[in-house]
Amino acid sequence: MKIGIIGAGNVGGTLGRRWAGKGHSVTFSSRGEPSDGLAKILTESGPSVRTASVADTARDSAVVVFATPWPATQEAVNSAGDLAGKIVIDATNPLRPGPHGFELAATPSAGEMVAQWAAGAHVVKAFNTVGYNIMANPSFPGGPAAMFYCGDDAAAKKTVAGLISDLGFDPLDAGPLSQARVLEPFALLWISLALNYGYGREIAFRLMRR
Image (tube, rainbow, N blue to C red):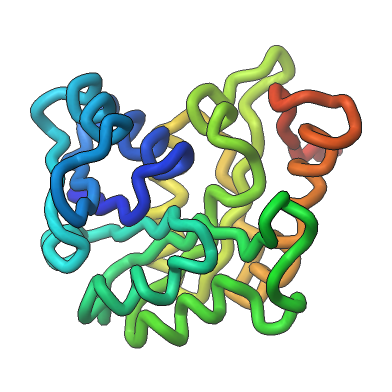
């Protein structure tokens, strides 16, 4: 599958590198010469990874992932051009610097705002509830870490669930895109436990059934 990554920081870089390792064709957006970090990713990921402009990355990809800092997200979506009909994965969290909470109230969520900006796209919220280190390796002694996702288009969600499974997560459908109002604050639980309350970054969540 052709996957475009808008935002090649810790989250975008990790996701793109791992999908490339699973045989997907990955394009990272770049506004010029690749940064040292992106150049390293390209070297490590092999020939199935390339760079292009934001617009070209979005145009040539079936799935477009936004893994940008929240203040840069609207500009990134606008720079991507026409996203109608494409699957868009919103991996953002509207964090204040620090992070010390959110820039937004729960309504509307960042995911819903991305859907407004990316008119006609099939937006799925995912990859926002754990750190990039868990995305690099979601395997735990008790089983794979959970990755919740939500969206309004069933076919898009099925595709994203497959991409989640490719990385070794347990994909869990959390419902329509409005559920991003729940998943985004849920991200703060992971962040606060990992960074502020002594649990460390090697933690994740699982859904247990009986």
